[in-house]
Amino acid sequence: MENTLLCISLALIAGLLMTRPAKRVGLPAVTAYLVTGLLLGPYCLGRLGLAGIGFHTMADVASLSIIPDAALGFIAFTIGNEFRLSDLRSMGRQAITVGILQAVVTTIVVDAALIALHLLFPAAISIPSAITLGAIAAATAPAATLMVVRQYRAEGPLTRLLLMVVAIDDAVGLVLFSASFGVAHALEQGGISVITVVVEPLLEIVLSLLLGAVAGYILDWSERYFHSRGNRISVSVAFVLLTVGLSSVEFRLGPVHCGFSLLLVCMMTGTVFCNICQTSGALMERLDRWTTPLSILFFILSGAELDLQILGNPMVLLIGAVYIAARSAGKILGARESCALTGCETKIQKYLGITLLPQAGVALGMALTAASLSDGAMVRNVVLFSVLVYEMVGPTLTKNALAAAGEIHPDELKPEPSKV
Image 1 (cartoon, helix red, strand yellow):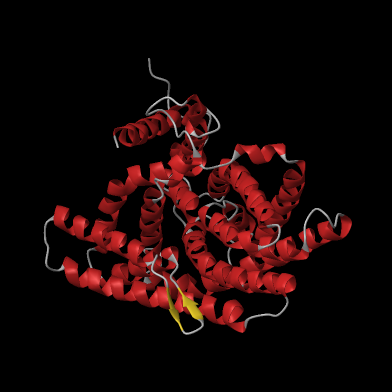
Image 2: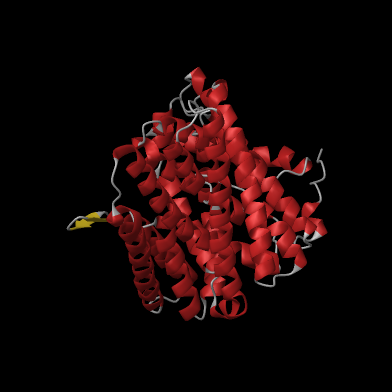
């Protein structure tokens, strides 16, 4: 216990210190936290085996999984705040259309590229793995996006649409992955299950939205019994942690496996709460400040769990390079064309796709599910490689895109002056 607390505290301090040089060279704080995690991980300082300094093994990182889960819950709860009725009336149709189309286009582009790679090098990647990776490509990391928006106080139509699309992306990605993985599994085993491909993913979305809606209403009802700021924040924290815990529950209804999506449950809780609670704005602002250390630890642990050994596998690097290039092209093309179709501003058409490139936890979760494929280990390694690349450069690309669109004030981009 003592070593764990020491390791967490030193990791948090190191992450904060790393943001100073990062800011001077124009890098977002997210990148600094991820680099800190890499340095403290099992492949750098963690290898030294010094008590309290770094994460010695991947098991050490996995033992702290409650921190990333809780952080994702608060991040999703905050993103739910973006779905206010006033914004939905003005941008709801655009957000839903763009969220669906950009994900579908990305999946198609990555599928085509990886199937072409299979035709050229049949031993490199199988058709089932190519189809599965295409669906995983649709996922976007909400945590990195939200952290960049917060750090630079980005504001404008692109930022509002981006946060909505990132939220919708999780639901669309879930359906695409379930359907694609079902087809991939059928190609390997023979025979396709309608329950696995269609019923279970749709049921997961419905159950998640229902649970989130109920939690949002109960949270609003509970807040009315407390008046002090501390008590109201405590109730909000308790409900977010409650929804995170409930989202891990799984059960069966006959042949149907039922579960919940952590992101969807917490997003829906935030959406309902922020639309029915008159004081939700001030409460969310105070909650954001309270959860900042949790978010920092989330990214540090994300950096620590990145497996650098995959960089020594040439085949993974080849497939990963094709995957990254195709996914980037799919996100940019899909976002641009869907934005044009819905009549978005030119700057949104130009820059939205770039802001959707970060990829992390959701994709890794999908890759873990894909482990049952014959070459599931390769799928996981390719996703790990892409996450390593996207998490390092994605936040900077998001920052640059938002700045180019004029939604970050120039003062926020100025490097911090050196202090003697």
